[in-house]
Amino acid sequence: MSDVVVIGAGQAAASLVARLRSKGHEGKITLIGEEPSVPYQRPPLSKAYLLGEMDLERLYLRPKTYYPENAIDLKLSNNATAIDRGSKQVVAGGEAIPYDHCVLCTGSVPRRLPGAIGGELAGVHVVRTLQDVDAMAPACTAGKRVLIVGGGYIGLEAAAVCAKLGLTVTLVEAADRILQRVAAPETSAWFRELHKSHGVDLREGTGLKRLIGETHVTGAELADGSALDVDMVIVGVGITPATALAEGCGLEIDNGIAVNARGLTSDPAIWAAGDCASFPQHAARMRLESVGNAIDMGELVADNIMGTDRDYTATPWFWSDQYDVKLQIAGLNAGYDQIVVREDGTARSHWYYSGDRLLAVDAMNDSRSYMVGKRLIEAGKSPAPKAVADPNTDLKALLKA
Image 1 (tube, one colour):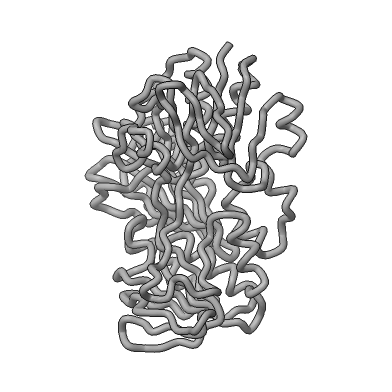
Image 2: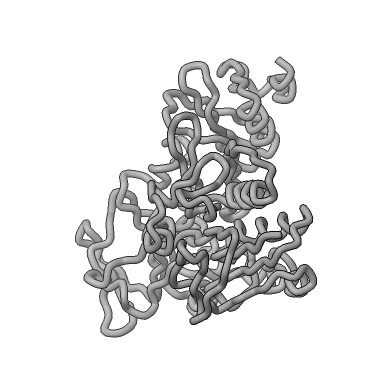
């Protein structure tokens, strides 16, 4: 019987402790979380929750009663400050908690605007936690003016919600186009037109020079010299893995907390899972920021703590909700050299190829293309691009080819 201490209380941690108990782990399980809430879903925060379409209870991954009923010791509003690898103890809230297995599910932290350009002014928000969204909610009222900095998925989702709530929305992206790091020009163009059709003032190739205000933000000066009056700012310029605790105890870091194929760090008693962990994949090292990866890695580590000894093979999938559009993504598009566009009525999908090999699919309100594409990629099958582009092709038939 072994004692497990899990640091972090997000999706990976919640999946891990539930898996341990469901697999019959009888040792003590301690879950340490910085926030006051039991583990909850993050994706709906800036969408359904901010829109008032989902209440707090529905955010919870499991009911509050689940944890005491399953003998999981929740230490919330509690910050783990150190790991003593020699004595195998986690220091949190002034208490030394012994472990046989320690699991780092510390997630990631949002990048913030530097104070030198006004990032410390009141009214400047990031979107990561329940507290973040609760803090911005009072300002998200019709007629207010919001500046969104960053044209990735977080920024675009925030723009969609603010537009639906009746705010005047300006979004700036310093790169040449929105979604430049993560999607093809075809996908960027599709979402550009979507946001413009909902009244978003979308400015690409334009960065933020500085924010204006005494204590609360009142305006912004952009890199092109233009100025805006604003009531609030939402920053969506990416996240970084939360590695401070791992670095502090000397674990190997490589674009996150480096783990082997089983989720084990450079210390044989410490594991890592989720956004914070980088793992080997196809002779390289990868870190994924997604709900799917957090669930899969959390369950993998739980299984391996129980002695399963299995390796992790990522099957990347992502999604984004904007207005009435659900974008579903399967695979990773790195190294693509061809985009195949498939249209079938209002459904549209972009298929990424490297030569003849299918890498990824972006599907906009096209769940069929997403599901078929995902299964093709996982099976290592690559249908002919011409067949994919033909709307008369039965996609399911491609799975049998």
